[in-house]
Image (cartoon, rainbow, N blue to C red; front, side, top):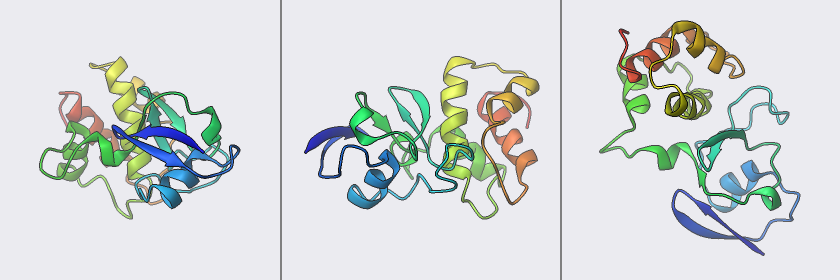
Length: 151
């Protein structure tokens, strides 16, 4: 048994050491923000932060988690959403919503490092996150808005 810190709270983990972090987050801790999309770290639906760095939780074994994990549930609250969460709502950047958690988590880590990005930088930062519904333009507008740029 190991303990991991998720969204500021310690959790005793009973899973085997090679169990993907995503499975622990969803099945043991019961957080539904990170999604299983591909299982190959190619779509970004499972993106979470470990010590502020975006990682694809579908391929990270729980035994490799040494830092603090933040999921979309720990980024903001319904009463006080993170600026990206607010911007995604205002720009109606979700259609089915499956990719939204991963997009927001990738964008939050990116904006923490690049607070005033160019359009090209935003596109590059989100290039590895797939949206199957095609709301890419609204997602880009939301990230620009959260960065203080014109939507």
